[in-house]
Amino acid sequence: MDPKVLDGIIQRLLEVKGGRPGKQVQLLEAEIRQLCLVSKDIFLQQPNLLELEAPIKICGDIHGQYSDLLRLFEYGGLPPQANYLFLGDYVDRGKQSLETICLLLAYKIKYPENFFLLRGNHECASINHLNNLDQIRNLARPTDVPDNGLLCDLLWSDPSKEIQGWGMNDRGVSYTFGPDRVTDFLQKHDLDLICRAHQVVEDGYEFFADRQLVTIFSAPNYCGEFDNAGAMMSVDETLMCSFQILKPAASEKKKFGFGSTAASRTGTPAW
Image (cartoon, rainbow, N blue to C red):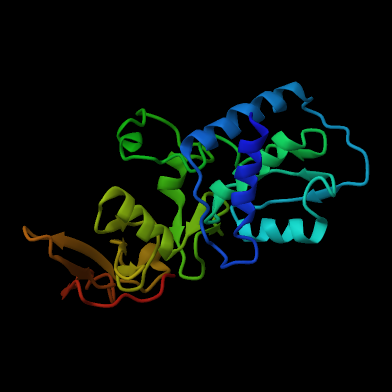
């Protein structure tokens, strides 16, 4: 790789240092591909088990938090002022995965014997690989649900009002996603609304992310342990949405009670 091209990429990636967090760096697709190809050859030339000597700076998960990566370099010194070992999980969840991995690969190419990158569990094809809806159409059936990847996340991920981006899921599988992820997904795929289930909600339905996502739960008095209503969403010819509410039974004799509400009704917090 031409050293001048490499230095130019590094310079652009570092120009945002000290600026507004989240400011994107514009790189050409050809530049990114070249970083991947050249660094791949370097990785393959080096052993799987790295036996490194001190002094060395060791860094853990970055997860696309590029401004924090730059802060780490401020504290430890930019390469080659210090030797570095990163332990993996460079991408996913954070908003600047691309800038993060590009700077790390660029430094790996420039200082191959001073800058080391291990592979984490997020460095795999299943991370961030929903590029178009055909990937859902083409999922093989029948199939078991894997422990991670696209199919797992389609079935197990949950919205969370407490975060932006991605977060850990209390279920112990998949992730939670914030309102910003919903907005980005809808814009990317030219959609208006996500309808999903998978969570008990008190009124049978609940909106999220400025009414861009709705959770529908249709089992009232769930498992006899929740006093929740159930709901059914109707979409008419004009794409207007309304909800029919199945109220929780007061007793076994009075099991079904129906109500109706327009789509303007506000949901309540998830259980």
